[in-house]
Length: 327
Ligand code: TYM
Image (cartoon, rainbow, N blue to C red):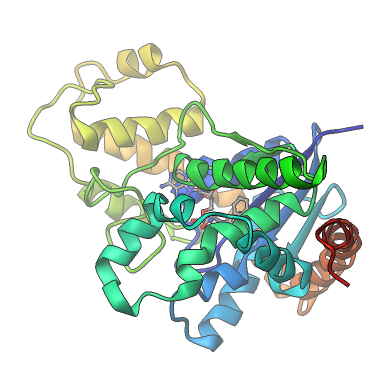
């Protein structure tokens, strides 16, 4: 029996190379080793205001990009969270077991709430509980995510443990799987901030559907420093981030990369990086164009994915309800 992997992506903003290098690429490469479930978490998207038409289009775009990146619906279940109502139901039950104190400690909530203060929704506060439900419904062993989601996966694990302590073995305790390199890609415009999908400036992120010209222009303008030497030096966050992107895509050793660019300047390195990113994204973009040229293809894959996910989730939910004494 293969171990189960579950992971999710929130269909807001763009699929940028942070999301790709930190998560999606690993989902693709692990497909043969695990039993995989990947979810477009549309209910998480509405924890902040969304334009319904944009959200609807983003769900298809994100699903299309996962498939174009190499997620194979024959080997992995790909579905939309809102198609399987067990997610919302289990989130409610978990709400009744997760202490408020655990939720207050979530750094992502603190950061987001800081900006919006009183306007922040209850859903945003409760985000980790829905995420725990996503993971726990499928008896997930491993959750491949970028660094920013580690705390949420740990909360899911703690919630599972707490429930199991009260009701006996029910949930599998999930482990976060965080890649050694590329787990935290930073913004090109400001390398002290994580590359993010939400309302950032035009030069902030490289998105999977960016044209070669856009990629080049964003990389050439990326913030660096006034030095010249190209070294993996964490105290120089701009060049360090660009080098990390290069390292993650090429898989080359740090010392080899440094040797390759010895004596060259930032602009030579940036040209090489732009070429590397463009070539990495080219086949994905071609597959995306082919997929979207077939009307209804993405929708039918999502529908089939939900039909496979639903019975697994419903079985788990039924077990939980029975243990809790519901129904
Ligand atoms: P989301 O949509 O923000 O990101 C999708 C995945 O990409 C990773 N990631 C990054 N990795 C490296 N550098 C970055 N700059 C970067 N930005 C994003 C994220 O860590 C993530 O793995 N809450 C989740 C979605 C979710 C989920 C789940 C994930 C909902 N339910 C259950 C796993 C399991 C999120 O918003 O990811």
